[in-house]
Image (cartoon, rainbow, N blue to C red; front, side, top):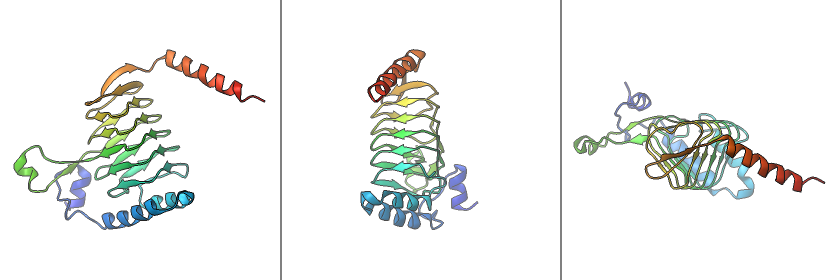
Length: 203
């Protein structure tokens, strides 16, 4: 197997020779994207679509943004990322529909061996990350390698997500833990708030 194939399969690989030209291309695109004036944001999103695995037309990523490769990032419909998103996409990053990220969210697929003698060789490995539909990730959250976050879940700001989080819960903390389930009471409360909002805007 090549170093690139080893990276994609989750095996140890040498990141210093695992280029395949993606790093250089990605860094050029990211630099150009981050330097664009705000009023040219749609042009910047077109730049990102050239390097992402999938980035729909209705996705919105605020500057600055950084990723390692881009080709390993697959984004669903109606994605919004606030400023400072960082994705180390040596593994695949799958983001569902209607996902929102607060500022300075960090997603790490790359990892290093626990054994110090192997770690100092410079070898690393990657684990895929999957984020379900309708997830809200609060600002300054870190999502670690191999994590899966279930549909309709909320991750509180400042969390460090080190293990899988199921669907339909509010979770937060370092390490991130389930605080409670999202219930019908939540649904009724927010539907009432939305009805009040709509009433104030009725002519």
